[in-house]
Length: 173
View 1 (cartoon, rainbow, N blue to C red):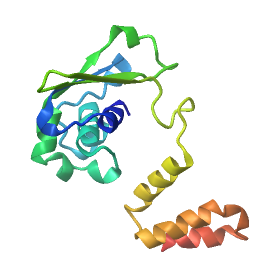
View 2 (cartoon, one colour; view 1 turned 180 degrees about the horizontal axis):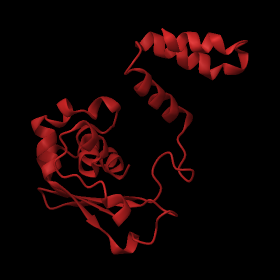
View 3 (tube, rainbow, N blue to C red; view 1 turned 120 degrees about the vertical axis):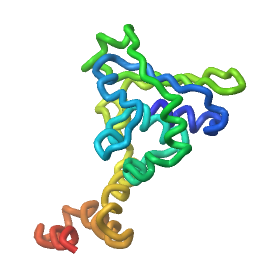
View 4 (spheres, rainbow, N blue to C red; view 1 turned 180 degrees about the vertical axis):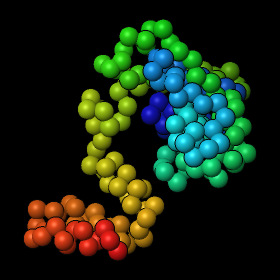
């Protein structure tokens, strides 16, 4: 979330990123995976998630696979990204799941963003649009865009469905 904030508020390109430092607590640092290559490591690497956010300005499940992770620009930015434990964040968990990101640019800028509660936390809930975007992202892995929209429409009007067989029918196709 902090990397997405920086990408949204600054002109950041892979070429002008010298180094990325992610500060978190020891709990968050457990998923500091500096060279993610497997299905699991790509999905859990702090460095990988930050690199994708800074490269793309958005994150979707389509980017969390071995093929995307093997792209030269992704590997290069992940290699310039490190995770450090911030002692001041150590006692936050579970009250805060904070992280801070610093992007050091080639022109000597130091861009910083911190998130105390990630998107989806009860203290930072997803908007209706966030939920719809995530639903489309997840459903799109299995269903066509048209079929995904039918499922979303059915769920959004679930109180009007007479029998659950109707909704289950959408999920089978």
